[in-house]
Image (cartoon, rainbow, N blue to C red):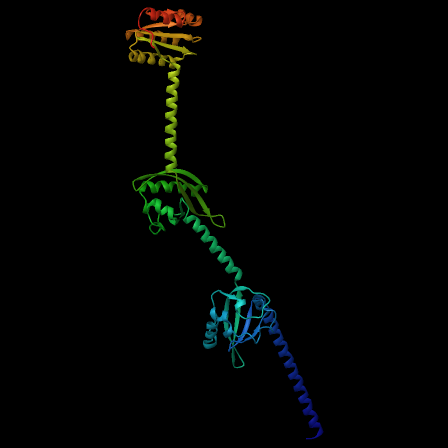
Length: 425
């Protein structure tokens, strides 16, 4: 080979080397790009060898697991030697990916970094939803793992479940009957107190309407109230009388609309508090109050028209204050009953304490005297005031058969002097 040929070969080799260097630089740039993309993926990612050893892990995954650096875990962590990975089922799914090449999506699983044997900046428990896919590179199988951090979602779900359990416990143990119906009147929820009150199990009512489980008249009454709540979208409080298993119940029921997050009506809730005993207690209290008032009224009547026996056959009724028509009628009734009870032959009616009377009352007193005469007794009227005398004269009242004395003392003396009886001890 001459010099020219050698020079040409060297030039060709130089250009080949340059091309190789360019391809190597491009490959390095491509690898750096892929490495950068992997490092900055917004989802936690990792790459494992078939023997379970961690080959790479990106920044987001390290942050989630509180791992300080790649060097602290890459090439050192083996999934098969990780107790949390074994207990959480990670290794079992890893074997499926290695063996069959299928992609696997795991259910959310807790991962405690304190028990995983990792070098970490802090201990924490994270919930991950892991997805594993095979990657065959250079004749070797790797596994790409993406660990979606669902810790916040699981905490929110747990909080929702706790809140639901809390509300369910309150409703279930409430001392009132609680139920929820959809807009078609079908039961969606009932509590224990509802079951006890209505005498039915929840299995017998859920998904059914009142017409399926209650007497027709009761079902229609409930339906009317619920239709009103649906029409007005406003609460309705109503006292209801129910006859259940032969026993009368008085319920104070509050029905109100249930709205979804968009403010749309989707159900009606009812809460029925039994007030049977309180209503019975109120009725009894009212009865006792009425009885007390009746006794007080009778006592006041007795005090307003007292009838006092002062001697055998002689009774005195001193009247004080104004006399209206009802009181005049009471005077008549008391005198007639007293004459019979005391076998009286003379009644002294003292009006010293009566300032005045009107025409109807004056007529009533005259009729009283006449009624007394019919029972064989005589009326002695004492203490007539000038105003009363004027009224009697203006009326032209017939006082025949009525004895009159100026004072009560003179009247009593007259009755005793006539020997109608002796003074009682």
